[in-house]
Image 1 (cartoon, helix red, strand yellow):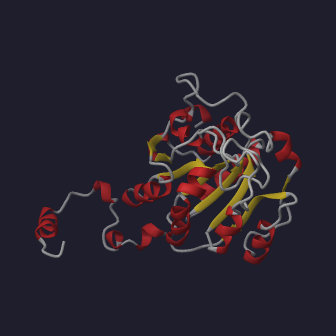
Image 2 (cartoon, helix red, strand yellow):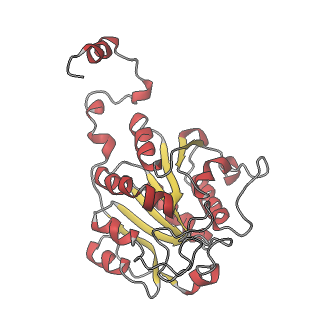
Image 3 (cartoon, rainbow, N blue to C red):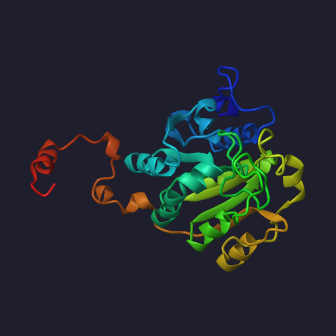
Length: 286
């Protein structure tokens, strides 16, 4: 199977601005899905609202647009109902870290077997460039004309501190490296979080392609099993480390669900037990 199996380019219009880093992320993702020999019919891409949220339109998979910030709980439910699917939640830094920040935290606690890809361009790209949770201090935006003064969120340190089972970061301009990290994330059993730096040519004139190239480096000497070292690396900000920060093995959400203790048939493929539904409807405790 090759990347064309997931490719919808040429069949639809793409609304991203020329030069947007989302194009490179799409390329890395389609290559990763193909090289893992996944099938479009057995892959689900759940997105939120924003430019990154348009990704299901541009890849040949089962796609679902959730509410703003709600891709992760939707993806968790999809995986619980059909554990045989490869499930990916995708959204921007505003979508995942602001509106969806609470869901990210509790997904780390639950550890569903899904992959979360965050398009981190450090700005709100869809709604014309106001600051996001990861916008750097002193960045001037339409809604912060005197410069951002809030400390930016460190999503990598947050995820490691909560013992997320797979934490990585990359830059979209490195297409092959990003592809390999996405492959590792999808192959990992448990919640995988991949923060993907990328440029927004229309609304972020600070964090450009050259800025990311000059201010990031790949960790080639890092042991992702070492949580303490991973956390220390996550705190670096003179140059931002790229690569897999942390991996740990934990029980996954779907395996702990009572619905699968005695019956391994996916919930979606079961016949409803009418008498049980009647008991719930007629129960005075409801």
